[in-house]
Length: 266
Image 1 (cartoon, rainbow, N blue to C red):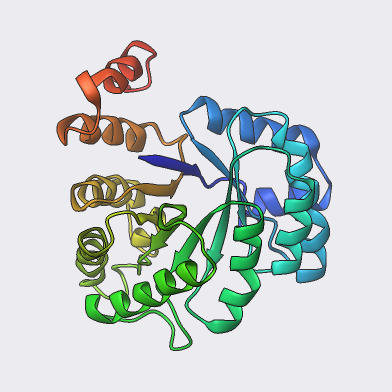
Image 2 (cartoon, rainbow, N blue to C red):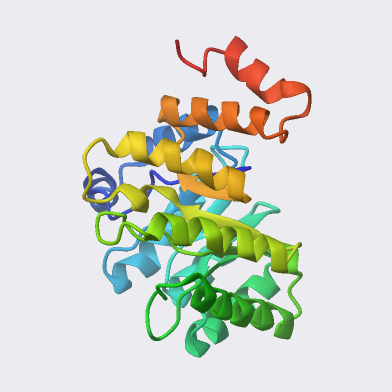
């Protein structure tokens, strides 16, 4: 299970304000805390205004990359910002987050993924937005897979995001997401799945309860990676427990290690 740490995201007010004042110590601390909590990738999103993002994303990448031992996920819909960030990136492994099934997004993002041998997140979304059914989302997943094939990118470099829609807007959407994950895994053995976990609870009370419960359910359906907050100890505890119970944690070593290091809470 890949944990992509979500906290460095300019949609969050503290991140946006830290970007405005170029607070290096703040961002270094955020990155290090997330790595220490168990993240495998640090997601970096500098998406304010497009012109600022072109400057801010490579600045963040250069600042953070040498302060952590894990790779970064470059989170942007701006291909110019991504290109500049990739030029200054110095780690062996990188993730690009993300592209859609729209032709212009495929042409903008996949050449970069190919050139830099990057993992790449593909969203099950097209010009018509997010489909409401499993069947229609799988049609878009087919297009994502066809696109990476066209650019001769290995299928195991693709992480499909079936897209989490808040259950507060449509109470069936949690189930639609889970069934789409299952369908992707059944149809494309090499392709991995990922999601922005916290979207499920948007607008609902006690969001953390919904988030951690949804994560455990999604693991049972075959979810491979999650963009999430690794500083949420209850979420991480549920993750370690679920991986052990589902047989994904050989000899329960990660669960035991987390217990010994105090990461499971009381």
